Each structure stands twice: as C-alpha cells, then as structure tokens.
Image (cartoon, rainbow, N blue to C red; front, top):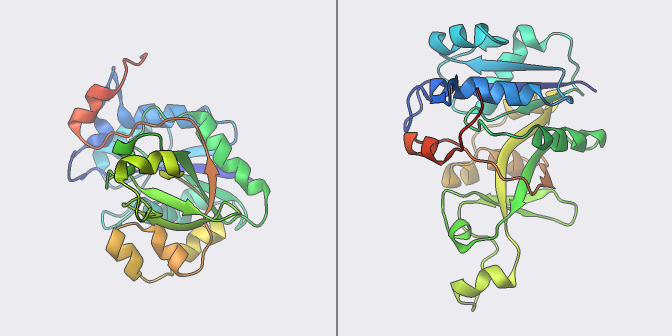
Length: 249
C-alpha cells in the first residue's frame, strides 16, 4: 500500500486572503506544512494542490505542486482533481490519499502516521482523527466540530453542537458526566473511495451543518475515527498567527 499526501492550498480565503503565503518566522505557512508532512515516513510523496499562480510558483521553488480549479468547494474536491492529474500515476484504487490541511503549520508527522496506520485494515475506506474534549469552552463552541462514534469507532454523526444532549443536566455538569470528541480535519481515503465521494449529491445534513463529511455518512459511507492526544493549531485569521510559538528557520 502506498500513501500520497496532498495539501490543498486555496488563495482566496474569506477570513484570510493569501493565507498559504503568510510569513511564519521566516517561512511561508504552506512551506511549513509541506516540510512537516515530508517528515512522515508513511508518505511516498507530498504534493501541494493550489488554485493560484503565486502559490504555484512559490511551491515550485522547494517542492511538488499541481494547479487545480478555482471553483472547488472543498479540499476533498481539490485532492480529487490533483490525483486525476500527473500525480495520480502509479497509484491503485487501494492506495491511500491523505488530505493534509494547509493551515496547520505545526502538524505533527505522528498524526499522519497514526492516520495511515488505520488502512492496514482492508475494510477501512475513509479515516480521520478525533481528540477528547477537555474544556466547556470547546464543548459549547459552534466552531469546534464534534463527532459521535459507535462501538467500532466509526463515525455516527458530526455536529457543531454538543451531541449527545444530556437532558435534565445543567450545562456546567456535562463535561464531568460524559465524553465528547473534537474532530481533527485530517482525512485519509482509499483512492477508489475518494473518487466515490465525488459522485455523491449534496445532502440535507451536510447543508444543515455545513460539514461535507455528513454527505458521505448520509450516503452510507463509513468514516473510521482514530483517537489522538496530540493538539493541533489551525490558522483561520491573521490574529491566529499570534498564537503560534516562534519556529526555527
């Protein structure tokens, strides 16, 4: 089994235009992510998939990059197009694509290795990560996506609200009474499963929560979840850059 890492890098972020080219301690964010991903020995290669010539030219100076459409609605769509191009050669339907978020400059290679390890089980078609929620702030934050899993660690539902709802219990008691998991948006797909996601029509649950993974679940695809204790920091706005530690050149 071979694994390819694809980093979607869109230029026109609503909250942070040009985000992949933001400077972080002397290197661009996209270079930071690329270099961290390249440290993962489970990946046979790492490719940036972008929609903008400035990002394309920049990444060419240090790594592999492919140009993709400006019309994609998700990183999954961008990964799928990148795979259908030059970088899809030499891979089979049972090989694995890892969709690596382009706005996590501190992503740890062990996170990627943990995810790819799930595919030693031939029954796993899509996998992702989750981390136990340990603060009420996270639990009730609608920007923190929660995931509910079954006894086999397959996702039942993703929501921006805390699920399950603890009826009759005061909110301040919830965290001590149950276990909730935050979804970490690092995805792995068998190549044939990734192609299958592109044939699915939009679903009502996806549209309600604005979470594309609900489309896959609603159409019967399983997402296997792996628990991690490694924290990840994403950069969504320019202010988030201030939360990052000083990094080496």
